Structure formats: C-alpha cells, structure tokens
Amino acid sequence: MSWNAEDLAAIGGATELLIASRRADGTLRPYVTIWVVRSGDDLYVRSAYGRDNPWFRRAVAAGTGRIRAGGVERDVTFTLADPATGADIDRAYHTKYDRYGPAIVGTVVGEKAAPVTIRLEASA
Image (tube, rainbow, N blue to C red; front, side, top):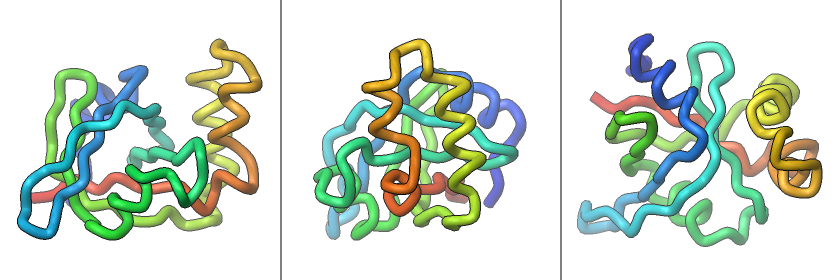
C-alpha cells in the first residue's frame, strides 16, 4: 500500500519518528525514537549503529510494526531498502539533518548506512 500525500508530508516533515516492531504474539515492543526521511514517495529510517542496533534487528526480524510522527500513527511493513536508493537517501538525510553537525549525521549516511536502511511501507 502506498502513502497518501498528507501522511507523506506529515511524517517526512517530522524531525523524529517513533518506531515499534511487533512481537511474535502481535503486541508492540516499546517505541524507539529515530530520524526519518522522505525520498520521493517513500519514507526511510536508518540504524545509526549498524545491524547490531536492537531496534533494527527486531524490525527486520518482525517485518511489521507501527510508527508515530507528525501527528500520524500507522501500521507499517519494514522492508530493507534497495541499495540503489542509497545516494538519494543520503541527500535527504543531509538536507534535513545537517544542522546537527557532521559527527551525528555521519552515523546515518554513506556506504555503511545503506545496508541498514529500512523502507517504511504503509499497511492496509
């Protein structure tokens, strides 16, 4: 399912996003606060600390969860992003978050960040 224009604008414009993956029994894990970017009609999040970051491992393993950002709360599917989108997503992170400085933004851009990029897909 694709995002509607209002949700894309609200979530993509939010500075932070709350993300929670689903447990095997369907309940949500506690929310974690992360950055979110919009590239085209897609929304992405990245793990600042690689594959070993607990929220990232749980999201990939679960495949589904819920997000909250910009006044929107939605069930989502977590899909690893196409590596070909890496440069566009890097630009989106730089545009949105460079004001926080290179040390912080550097944790979510570049070659090491591409493999830990999740595309958020709106669930029905």
